[in-house]
Each structure stands twice: as C-alpha cells, then as structure tokens.
Image (cartoon, rainbow, N blue to C red; front, side, top):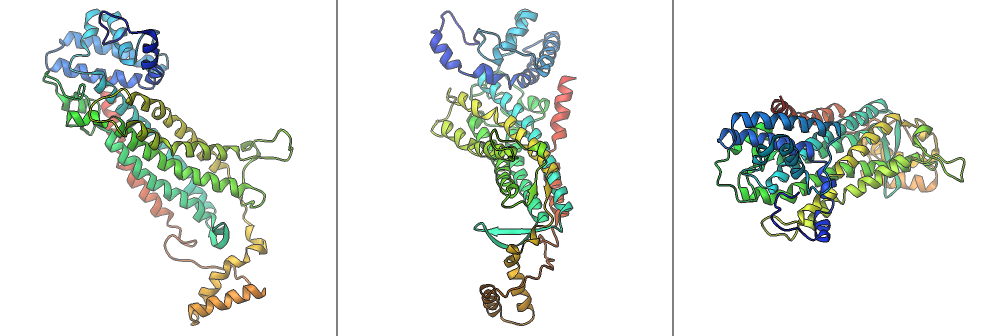
Length: 443
C-alpha cells in the first residue's frame, strides 16, 4: 500500500531501491508520527474537516497505536511503504473511511518533518540528561582529587604541574560549552513545520498555531518554503552539536588510554572494567575507552555526511533527503551509549596519588622556581636562564610545595562556577513545556 498509489504497479526493483531502508528507519519515528497525527486531526476538527465524533474515534485509536509503539511492538508490514502508510492502514482497518480523512491538508513531506522534529527534540533531551550525569561524575572526581598533582604536558613533553582536579574539571567545563551547542540545536529543532504540506502550504484554512501549541513547540517555521528547506539543515545543525559532545569524549578517552598505560600509570581501571588478551595473560586493556574514542570520532564525521548529501540541493523536496535518516537517526543511540559508559567508567576510575615521587618529573617545577626568583626581584629573563643552566648542570632541586591562587588554577578550581554555568544552561532548555504539552495531548 502506498499513499500515492493509483491504477498501476511500480517495478519491483525500482520499488526496492526507492524504499531502501525507509521502513527500518521509520520505526524510530513511529510514536512521533502518531503524536503529529493527533495534533493534526484535532486541528482538522476545529476547522470543520472532521466531526467531533470522528475526532473522538480517531484519537482513541491513535492512543492505542501510540501504546503499541511505546511497548516496542509497532511493525511496518510487508508491502507497506512507510510509517505514515502503516498508521493510516491501522486506522482504516478499525474505523473504515474515517481513517482516510487524517491526511487532509498535509503531505508526507511535512509529516516526516514533524516526526523528525519531535524525535530529535526528545533525543536531544536524552543526550542533555546523560551529559549532565557525566558532567557530575567529572566534577565529583575533580573535587575528590583536587590536591593530587600530576604532570602537565605540551608537545607530549613534561611541562608544568597540573592536578587531577584540573584534568577532570577541564572535561567538565568542556561539556558545559558543548551544552550550548545542544541548546542551540534544540531551539532550532523545537519549531513546528506542520502545515507546510509539500512546501507550499494548503488551501485549507489550517490553524498552524494550534498544532504548534498542541505539540509543545516554541514557535513554528513560519515560511512554508523554509519549513521544507529545513529538512537536512536541522539534521546538520544537530549533528554539529552531537559532534561537539563526542569531541570532548574522544579527547578524554585518548588521555585515559594513555594515562592507564604502565608507562604512565596515572590512573587505574578496576579489572572488571578491562578486557584481556588471548595470548598475553598479564593484559588488562582499556577497551571501553578505546571504543568510546572510536565511536566518538565516528560521530564527529556526522555533520560532513549530512552536508555531503544535502549540499547541492536546490529549494524543494528531493528523495536524496531520505538517505540522511540512515546516518542521523541511529547516531543518538550511539552517543547515548558512549555517554552512559563514559560516566560509569569515570566513576570507577582511581588515580595514582604518588606520581611525583618519581624524580623524573622534577624538571616540571622549573617554572615555579623561575617565578620564585622573579618574585624576589630577579629579572624574569635572568631567572629563566639561571634555572635552565641549573637543570643542564644537574644541580636543580625541585620545590614541590606550590601555591596557585588565581581563578581556574590548581589551588582555585572554580568548580562551583562551572557547575553554576552548567545549571544555568540546562535550566534554559525548559523541557517541562514540551513534556506538559505531550502529556496533555495524550490525556
């Protein structure tokens, strides 16, 4: 069954090729397709295209289908082209001709647009919530180990004193910046395209503000042509936000793999969080961080994949956009999995509190000595030269009693400010507005 089917059949190979993975991908969208239809038909009744009794029957049946979706039992049957066709078929089986009325004033174009927006909106909320969990684990570790020093590096050479407080806290603050990208993506996503039809509106007197409010959108995509132009653009912008979070995790995973190795031994992973070797009985490999790194790097390619599909398309709908779903929809589950695992393993990670007992790290305190001499009146350049010559002569003695006080330094992490920043950003999403609207729609 195809919504556009007339009195001829499409060649089976053409049908296979053009449908592609749509039926598989549309399972991600099923519950959101139902929500969009519930809002749409409520609006249709308000303009006289459905009777009150027809609306009552349709809403009752759509709520049943929604429950099927939430249980994970929704299927797109063989021979059915997509989720929109399946939902309409299920309605007509139960309600007859009434089920055929739900498509008035809408195209599959704006139907899939609203499905994608509702799906992405929920997925972004899930990503935000998981990012906050990882953030809190990092802040907790930063506070716990704030006084434990570790080497800081530039060019992979021992540079200056750092601390585990700084290391864990740096990634926490990075996630706070990533959250700004997620917030921008959420705001662009949370605009209603329903009513744009195939991109040129409808002669029916549709009430677009009504569906906007019913579905809990902040506003609508006002211009119907732009609403359709947003297909692909939304996915690209969201992909950049996902890539930003993934970039933070990839970098942290690389550090963790390095620091866990015997050559560094800065951190320790419990044996139950590692894997072994089939030939080397001593191995305890940080496979979790290696896979987080690989998956996160893969996710960072998502914006480019979306751009390469949509980049040279003019205004209007094209079937090319179908392919974006194949790379975009599964990306959320992959990122959520990485966030969950990263938070879990950071929680289990232990640190080596005696790294600096090894004299090989003594030279990193050279800057502290230069600063001490400069503070006592010696010109900085002369102090720099003196300490450098002492190091060359082997007479330098490290003073490991350091005292940093400025904001964001070893002695003043400003974790409370970083937490305040994250809390402010997260509170500005106002997830409760959309949740209340959907709850009301389903009630």
